[in-house]
Length: 534
Image (cartoon, rainbow, N blue to C red; front, side, top):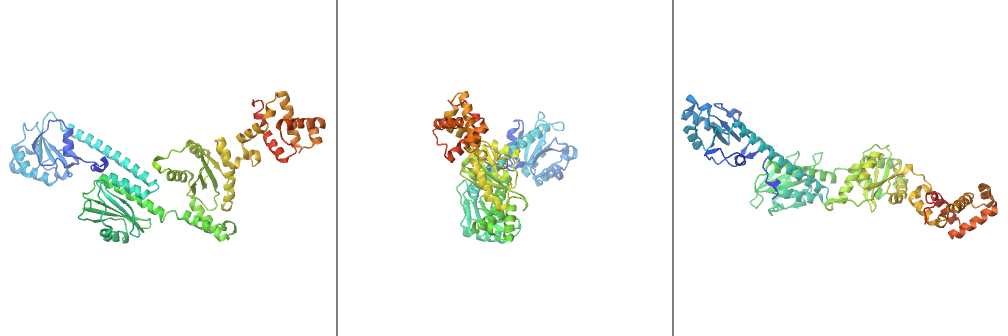
């Protein structure tokens, strides 16, 4: 059993745990069997009747002032001890000096008579030292319990992000808390189960039907309790799972043989809250995306041929899915992972989907073979872009568009994706020059120039520059000999001769329009490569 399942309640340690931390100077004069009692505090008091000020589970310390003079009579001592027992004091510590050299016999006899644990506290052990030791032990115990609760909550959250969240969450719960667990839907059918770490499984569902009927038909946050004569089922507790409108969405039923500690109940309440969140998401939560998807899947033509009323309805659903107003522009964003993503424990795609939904503030995200695609109302500023790139991703950020323009915006973003993949840099569509050179990008254009113009680029500068200038001038004038000769300040026969040399070097037919187009594009990037080709 994990330690968290065995941890005691918050703000308590047992009397024996406390005694184990003290120096071996305390002498037990009577063992009242309270070693496993939970201590709330250690309190010195010299009042004749301190019980009005004592909480249950106190370790009371006294130097015997109430027993001086007439207060030391057996009857007065007996009444004092009886009041302590009635107040559920865990133990009495009697300090030696300044009033008594030994513990009075009347005190010892009264503690034996009423079975109150009694210690003799030597003069060398100040009451303040005992109180300080208890507070330090209490603090360390609470810190341990809080660490365990934090780790348990992290495990529950990881379960929620898994592909089968309800099953994984119950598995995490029964690992941390000694219970079996059954989750049922609003129809009373079992959706997930979890056997306890000790092997105990849920009782037959037919035995739980009366409890489930009460849970699923009732109103308001409350629990139902029952018990059965089966292993692990002496105490069965049912927790309702409700919507924000108090509708019955299901129930979580837990069984154990012993009551749970406060720390364990804290874990159960966390699990109930997460399950409630899951069923709300699946049923009553996030209605807009499912309605939008249903409308578009069943009537894809409605985006172009739908009536104004129908389009306005779709715009409203889209706005809800993007957490925006109906008139707010939106963007298509595509994400490309340039580094291998590190997803923990097989729940990566779900975690990744939720990550992009959170970062882009949208419910419209899909995981793709290249990364993800999303529709968002965000502008995706430089700060957000930097956060995304730190995770090893690059983005294509589309221009603002409306509902009917989304397909075209997606196509434009897709046309830029290859440029991001080659360059390793994010691109904003509204900053791209929508031309062949703009869409091709520097890296691809440079590669094209290197391959097409390699024989010319390999020449010495005094031959390379004139040939490239003639080629550029001739292509810019659409192959006109006279116009290019005038532009270049050469005789038309000189232009014709150098074009012939280029055709031979490049081994291309320069009369073909496609060849001319490719060479014109390549020339836009040639200056970056001149003289660099072997």
